[in-house]
Image 1 (cartoon, rainbow, N blue to C red):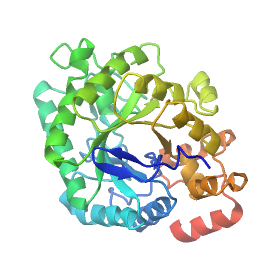
Image 2: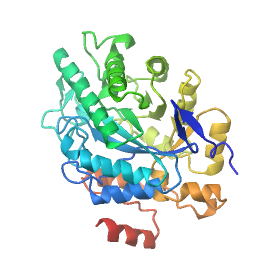
Image 3: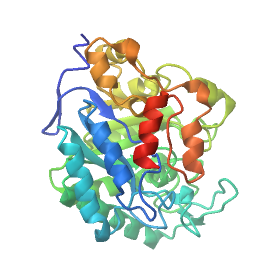
Image 4: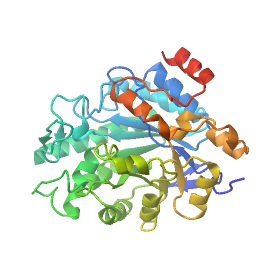
Length: 372
């Protein structure tokens, strides 16, 4: 059953046993100050045992507090966290799953920072970031390099650059948030410069370790980054040697728009973006966004719309999703419920570890016993 989903794929010399990955998902499980907590380790052990081929650990900051989305954002900016990162990579790999660490600078969304920085001073949620000086950009690239080197030292199999959700890499790319007049602003050739310099520097730092990219294909904002430019940027990334592109749409400023809320309730609501990017490049693409059934995910791969499936909330809601799909037990899957009102997101926005309101009572009891 589902021969495409459960066939292997090789990415720059690293073989994934099937086409299922855990897409990065922030749940607030790191300890205060961004440490690798017992809660985080238990969570990723559970995700790794699900049967996916690769687990992408979410949003490890390259700069704390200046680039951290919250005080519970995992830290990759300090050697003090290296032992914990090694534990995390080992816990994932012991389950027979590849471990990837996503590294990030939140830029204007760095809520842990007293004064967030960004390409330009464009207000967001009543906060005004400070525009980066040109000479500061090189220092931030260095922080990405250091974080990637820690990921390699910790034993992760891949590194992913977080260029999605409207974070710093995407902020430079977007005409909405990048209003610079220097070499990093203006036309697309300049707006993509920062991301390409980060990618080149990180690739040089990690040797043969594959470097992927979490990719914002469309901000879903009228004055933001749109597909025509992001397709060109995707080609630039592949020319730079990026191993895979993990496609998403939207930012924190568009997710709550009524038309986007309605769109996000639909099956495969970001699949069209993945297909449009895949049609223009020659590296594997990961698609995400309510690919909730085996049949839907299988067809997406079979039709050439994507190479891999990224399961985020769906896998968290039911860590046995891959096993149930492969065994023909899909009627037993606990699905992420689009009618819950994004309860998990509201929890993490309030600084609380999230739980899934779709879990049955017994699963909720187990979660509370383990994590509360």
